[in-house]
Amino acid sequence: MKKSLTIFAAIAAATLSLAACSGAGAGSENKGSKAELTFWHGYTEADGKVLNKIVDDFNASQNEVSIKVQINPWSVIDDTLLPALSSGKGPDIVAMPAERLPVYADKGAFVELDDFYRDPTSNLDKLAPAAVEMETVNGHKYGVPSGFVPLAMFYNKTLFAQAGITTPPATWDEWIATAKKLTVDADNDGIPEQFGLGLPDHATVANGVWPSLFYGNGGDIVKDGKAVVDSPENARTLKTWVDAVRNDKISPTGLDGIAGDKLFSSGKAAMYLGGPWMSSIAQESKIDFGIAAVPAGPKAQAASAIGISMAVTQQKDDSKAAAARKFFSYFMQKEQATAWSLGSGWPPLRTDIPAGAVASNPVVEALTKQAEFGRPLLPGVVNSTDVLTAVDKLTQRAVAGENIKDLLSETQASVQKVLDTK
Image 1 (cartoon, rainbow, N blue to C red):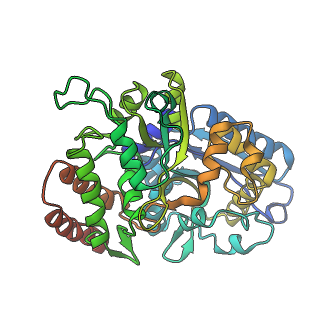
Image 2 (tube, helix red, strand yellow):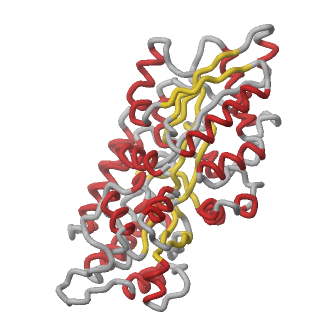
Image 3 (cartoon, helix red, strand yellow):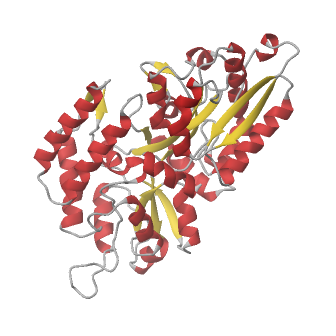
């Protein structure tokens, strides 16, 4: 899963995947014949094996639908989906980073699923509301989530113990105070040998680190289709964290996501924000780590969530769309949803699967306890990648020391221009 999420970070996302097929009523529409569907996804590690087994189990469970999986790198899926659909050689079901869903929905590539969500046999009534929100574009649902996980705070238990700290911070004030205590400049040369926090200022995981901070202080990036970057709340957030990085040196400046991963895995950062893949990185590096929620800001406790969506592509044969829905219903059954969560490392998508049900996987259990704080990143925003690029430049330049007021004004105009572009 680590590799999957690393690829997503490059596109503006991180680990993930899934896809499938289904269709309530497929049997009546395909009497005597089996609907054959192709499913593209990018899961290549343990998560891929679990997903493929669920698909195989679905195929064996009935005689109306057969799904064939085709695994492609996430970037390849993104590059080739539209040409493949135009030539009639595209998939019937496709999984992709959730922030890319609006792009294709806006182009008419996906089937609207509003009726499916209202169907009592869909097994979608228990989905986490925030995960459903990320599937909504222009008021309509175009996907079914296969993954939704808020960023979490990973912390080095050994460094905490050495500093006499017994519990992770719960608020921003505690977070900054803890980071200061864990920042060590033994030779007083102005360059710490150990940082209290690894806080990337650009190219972060799915670009979700700084939006999480904005949410915590009551800010946002886009609201009701309008740019809201230039706000007093975001100005205060930037000042708080820029001061902590530049003046208190709790984190290196100019840090990107890849370097941040290495900083934490090398034991040189005591705290770091990341997703499930960070557990694999920490384990491989023999870091004794804990997982806690992103500390609460002055206004809210919230964390940007990474998501993967499964969508049904537009087909001339309506029976294929029905067959895809049949698979989705199977995938969202409580038993299958639990198995997927345990095997993939994602917290359960269903709200009726408690943390105790996935306790055999401690990482999943910890992330499940924090799922309520997750917020989808730019749900329904078609040009989300360009919006996130503008925010990325804002945070990097702010940490580098440029004027925050001027940067917010400039970024506001850039984001609004992106939103106005069709």
